[in-house]
Amino acid sequence: MIAEPKARTEESDLLGKVEPIVNTIMGVKKEDVQQRSAAAETAVDWTAIGVYVGGTLAQMGLMLLALWGLQSLTQGLSGAVNVGVAIAFFALVSVRSRLFSPLNNARTRTTYSTVNRPGWAPPPLAFPIIWLSIGVLRVISSYLVWQALGQIYLTLPLAIFMMHLALGDPWNTVFTVEGRLGAAVPVVLVGPLASAIVVTISYWNVVPLAGQLLFPMVIWLGVASALVFSIWQLNGAEPLYPLVLDKEIETVA
Image 1: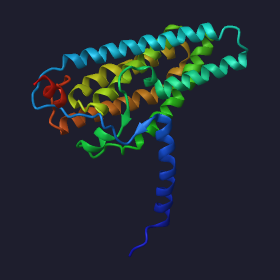
Image 2 (image 1 turned 120 degrees about the vertical axis):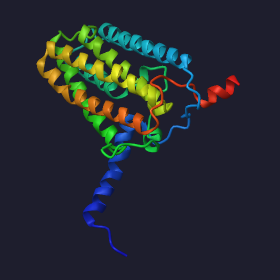
Image 3 (image 1 turned 30 degrees about the vertical axis):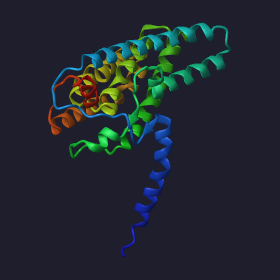
Image 4 (image 1 turned 135 degrees about the vertical axis):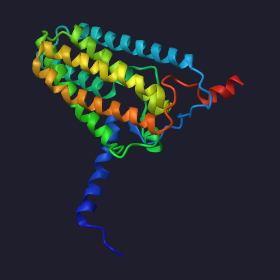
């Protein structure tokens, strides 16, 4: 029996220790039992579209309400406490913005682990690590903008940031939870990628450094969009809209 190289063993042990920590912070689960497959028919799931739009708007409203609430609650707090609250809030929304969403935005590996992927596709563990790194950059850049705008939460750049987060979370519902590979393509382009560009420009106009810190997010979302498109092509290129799922067709029948 050939012994496994010591360096590889140590790397595997380190990965085994780091993975659960990263997954816990990012809220990643390995499986999602709620996932369903698309039916053979190509019927448009108008109900799903309404749910996505309604859930996204509701999340936007709740996150903007949080900005307003923080502005009211932090008035009169000492400088150090106010800074601590701001950092904690930006960390929460940067890593777990889906807590504000009524949709199931669970981050799982179910879909990604089972679909055909291009040879250049990153391993599943890469995603929470990358997003955690981007989350740190989001916190720093948002804090810089908040400070530059007089420590006011309810401002246009921060409101745009909240809307960007709310537009990004439904992608997890569409692709990860429900496995709608076709609908995931326009959702990732119109939602996360386009809004990331807008929020980066908005932050740049206030504090150039804050905008520069978000460049990696835009680049990564460009790569992620290309990956979503490639996965869609490699797995049958279903229509670019939400298909009625098997369970729903059985219910109608």
